[in-house]
Image (cartoon, rainbow, N blue to C red; front, top):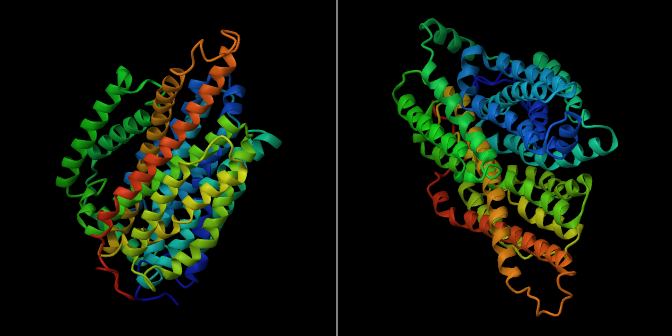
Length: 508
């Protein structure tokens, strides 16, 4: 029998944990896909006769459409119906994955990736709102432990699986693997997940009021977040703000997003409900989730890049350095779900974890070229063991005080912040690596002269290779140190999070 205290539950008469597992299937697939294609990019570009620069648009096109759909996914779920919208997203993601696999040209691949990003962008926020509505406050932390596992571990598994499929089969299987998973998800969601009567009633009432569509807000979201994502992804490739293209993108994005904020605050039915940020717990949680995305996604790219570029690892082995950390996350997620709120207040867990995360980044800044596989894996483990104690408490506390009928819109915003954090993090890391490598190379080269005893200029080439390698590793260490400092400097904001009463009822 359905729980009368949870009228918005997606479980209906069924076990909510069964529904949680069913909902996690497609989201795991989508989050996995954000990293699985990265290691196969060179093979995909070669097969499609695309240059290295053109190949990066295979990643950019997905991220741009993903960034556009995320902030409006809550509104779309309310208008279309939450279950129906979720199934449409899963179906679109699955079909477009097939189109990616059979693409014969770069243009076809880019169109398919845009569609895939649209489908993928709507899944995670909708699932998260279902989690919030299906479990009472005192059980949300354990529920979000399952959701957190999909978000934190999937990026770690992606490079390993993508490298293995590419090395042993072909890059097409990076996308084809989504087909059976997507089909299974659609079948189980259609069979088991419930669209509550209360949500159906709210949708009918919304449509009966004449349905005032926020066209300008939608346009501003598309232009603002689309240009922002392109700018972040192309910033270093196009020489930063010395490029007119990047300056134009920054200006268009800045004006569009500033206008969006003003417009959405005044609109009676905003397509992106920015007013939710006025809820203290939710606003701070969004900022902290930005930090999680910034650190998680950037370091997920950083360590395999270090392993392949400087240590000569292949795609599979470099991906395995992340898999060890993913295993540690798997072990700690249930424990973090148990202690959150029940034994320790979420704000204190977040505080300890953020400080621990900062410490682990600073510790990684002491690596050198003599490190082996287990040294890099250990560095990853010390980073990700803190993430369950950040992600789960944030997910649990962010909905405290938020009206239940705004859970879908809140999920869209908090997932947007995580993705934006990832975009800014990757752009920051890429830019800093380039700049610090140039800096260290120049400083080291100052000490190489014809009077150092080398056979000059015969030995210049190997000497330069050594200098370049040392400059590169020093730049990685600088970036780890900077990421650690960023994490260590945000802790005062955590003190403003509210206490979460045990067994508290959600706000109505």
